[in-house]
Image (tube, rainbow, N blue to C red; front, side):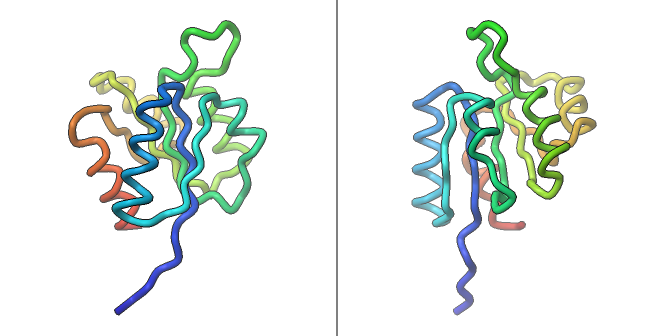
Length: 127
């Protein structure tokens, strides 16, 4: 039997119920070390180079004046932590949005839907 070290994963999403459900799924199904942040700013203050994967909501903090959105946080992360693998999440099924995030450094674009957790788990397991 092969044992692998748990991956260090960060989830950034202002939907606390979604975050906790995804965290529970990842820790229960594939046993990884998961931290959750509600804002990009909180994430950036705590982020370290030990993080391997960052799951980031595109429409982050749209209700908070002057808060950075997911695309802005993505750019800061890729500039300061280029080795972190970023998975962008969005409820938007727009091709142009997906391509924009990929061009800015996200490795995957996952649409929030009924299969999102399974898609994320597959990416994490195959990395």
